[in-house]
Image (cartoon, rainbow, N blue to C red; front, side, top):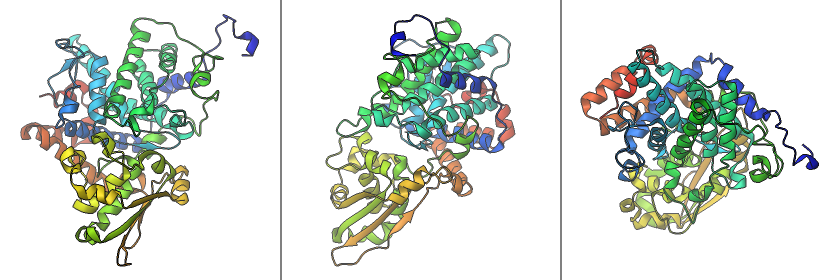
Length: 483
């Protein structure tokens, strides 16, 4: 559209990126066994994260109805609770549970994010539809259906993230959670391609949340419920498109002056590395061992290896040199006082200091009582963080997608440890065989740490057989998590 056409009321054809999403969600048949197997592990891991989050009152307070008493008997369940909610608020609650501890899966590229955040919308809508079908004598979605929608949501979020950096324009990555969840939730509710395109246009018109809550000096716990908020908004758009027939906005991206590109993306159109398929689920990074921002995962592994050499010599340390990727420097290199849990789990110095001292890094290690140990800040003050260009290059290499870190500790007497360097963490695709048993142990521990033992045992039995699990109605599966 040229400048003199800006006043024209002629509605253009929908922007191609929105059409491409609608076509993919409606038409693409997933036939990758690896994608389904990974999605199944991702689902279990995400629900395990949700159970771990139930130990934190700051999370639990977000999980009920928006206003007291606004429950919906027969509505969508929130795992680990007795809540039954409308699917919009249930999407918020489940998304918040999954994301709270920064322990669910990760995707790193030009943009970062956590594709399993989309389970907030997917599980809420699936349970709502399943329970509705039961009441009406019909057949609701199965766990296999959930895996299919998850693969597609992962693909949309991840493929956009490969080449398009929303953080560079100050926006948070949950904009892509809202986009992917809007598309799949609309299709789940029975929306056709036109309705999916309509809903997606509304998602873009929402613009994006600022990353303010993820960065010093404003880091705070909103980052733990931001994805849930994106899921909630996504289900709203889906319901409006399918049940209320709202009007779409065909040039929501490209409209001069008023479209997303001009308003928020410096006038640039989106670019894409590959067509939609099942690539993202097959390559997603599973955060298995440590609840830490993913750019620091290998740094934590390095620190764990060095713990035995330095824990008894903390006062003798002269300096600690950390090498990371450019993104790691930009996101989690943080000095000065750390105000809260959210501040600490996005600080590479903190995430290295704790395992050097204690030989562990758990969710509880971000709490105030642990952070009060003066040795942590003493070590942080001795750390030097810099970019290793090779780590950055390997980070963006489509055939590698590494997340390298290296640590070396130097002592006052002139001695030092070896330089420990790890290119990719246990949750990486190249370490799947090593990682899956650890993931399953994490899942089992999360269940047994929160639910009654007999209930945890029922869930473990139900999830032990992939074929049986896939065939299970979602409403039955989520019922196993009701307390």
